[in-house]
Length: 124
Image 1 (cartoon, rainbow, N blue to C red):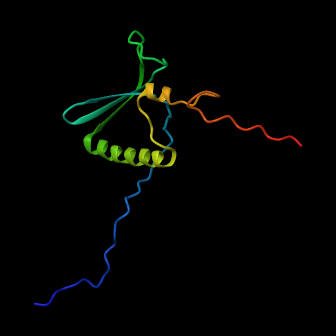
Image 2 (image 1 turned 135 degrees about the horizontal axis):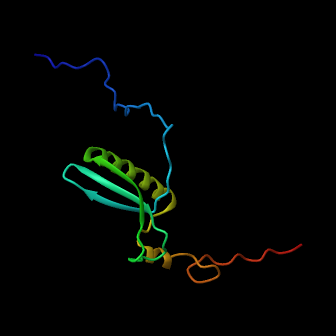
Image 3 (image 1 turned 135 degrees about the vertical axis):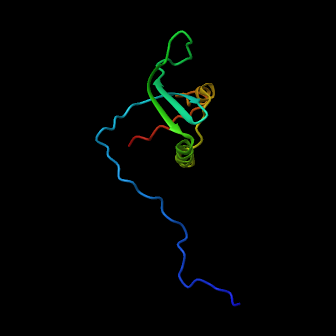
């Protein structure tokens, strides 16, 4: 029996389907705090705003939004976030998650760790 080959070319990859979206009820919020909880079937993300610069166990962080999703959706979200954050870091540099290290590495005007002061421009 002779080898059978397909005469029609196969597409290399199928594009992800595009779904129509309705933004009419969309609200936008800012968050700098997220708490993650899980059940055997779902992932729960609670978002809020931490207004203190240093951790203060006596001041509650006000949670304002909760997102509950199944683990399939969570994995799609994870992959999307990894891609976006990787692209950001490739463009602007690594994001330091340790707050204390970020503070230590901030450039100080005219001080150590910052860029050297600009040379004075000659006047004409």
